[in-house]
Length: 75
Image 1 (spheres, one colour):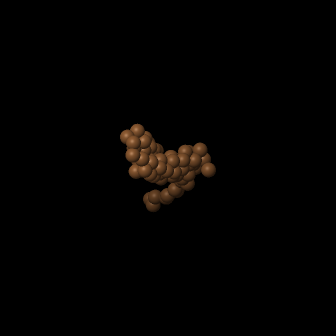
Image 2 (cartoon, rainbow, N blue to C red; image 1 turned 90 degrees about the vertical axis):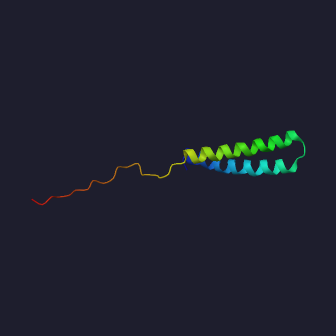
Image 3 (cartoon, one colour; image 1 turned 120 degrees about the vertical axis):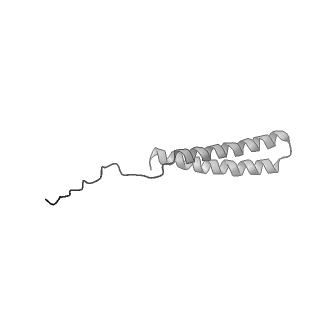
């Protein structure tokens, strides 16, 4: 596993966990400070997932160049 894959995996899991944990913390507290902290955790999780979406490549190619195609034209 490459370092990039580990970073993307960490962003995905950490972002989802932060959103869920922040929601539970927000709903379970009654004081304004704790509710603000829960909202901040949720916002941090959303930011992590947005970063994940922004940096995840849409397609992967191999490091080698494609094989050349040799064609002959009729004279």
